Image 1 (spheres, rainbow, N blue to C red):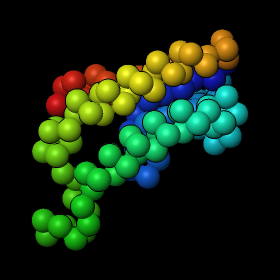
Image 2 (image 1 turned 90 degrees about the horizontal axis):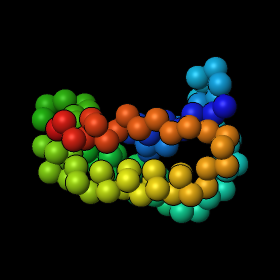
Image 3 (image 1 turned 45 degrees about the vertical axis):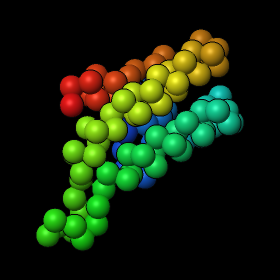
Image 4 (image 1 turned 120 degrees about the vertical axis):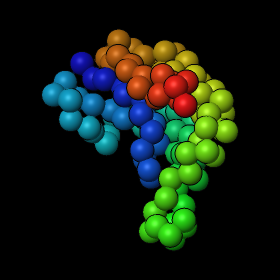
Length: 107
């Protein structure tokens, strides 16, 4: 059984597909071919990526925690929409593990 893990990562977005061995896989048609999930993942990725600033604050790469905190409700809403869509398309071949909502709520 596959696991869909929701966890933001720079240049990736929150949707991770893991096989039964816990290894990330790139091609999972049920998720990859769903335009709604693709668009939501892209929107969340762009938002999360915007928190990274390069050559800022005397560092080569700096993460803007204050901006993330200020926009956390937007990201929580995106994650909620992703979970809802995953529930709609789930054919029983995967489970969802949300690591992002709790992290965001704790900001």
